[in-house]
Image 1 (tube, one colour):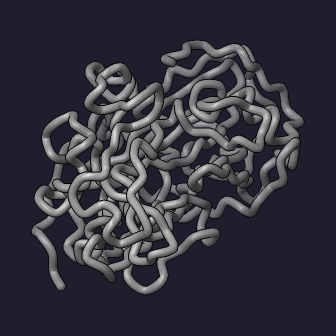
Image 2 (cartoon, one colour):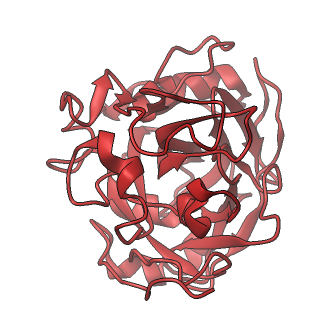
Length: 338
């Protein structure tokens, strides 16, 4: 059934040049020269780099149960989609505001590599089973590691995704990286976006709980939305919309997510979004848990050596632990916005 009319929002920080990055960027999708210019610090902007490697994102959609809101509860959204910074009313407001597709990014850079972390937000982690819990707010994502190879946007070497409290490691075909302390969980597929003609990594989130893996670790099963990084925030026209654009917003933008880290309406504690049991949360599952979603600096796989938040705040160190990396990896950051 058709939903609300699609709305457009200009991207935050992206430039029109991303749409026409050129042959050099297109040729550096997965395989490429292994020798990096180790001393060179990139002149490319963080916004353009994040746009270049932003995932084509498959979102499975489930329309069953009252807390699904006909599929809306699986749509990507901004954490302030309802116009305020109160995270404790997001569950209740999910059905009352347009869910314009937004993703958040942060860039960490060393002299040898870039590490770009993406966060995808949903106002609800919901269920239609008495064996599962529900909670307000949900934020999971992926970190992609890019080696500097002399080209403008480098060469993609690996990725680590967040699925609840577990991380999953991937390498694209032709990558020089192998398994380190963690196993490689699969191949990071790339696909050409019809919006810029470039190869992007392909990720997917499950419905309801929104765990994130490289496709086809998760995939669309029936209805679903395919989101493309195309510089604008669109609202899906219906739960099976296969071409929806999302915009990217810098986590470190003035007044942005990182700047709000001490806002007690938005965060219950360091790196943990606030969320209560008000509204219908818990009606679809066995219970509603509170304060259960984490920002990137709160992501953690408790079974692994790297500490809480390292995926975003020390991705070079985490990559050195997770992967066997044959090329030089400088772990000193050019800038560290965290």
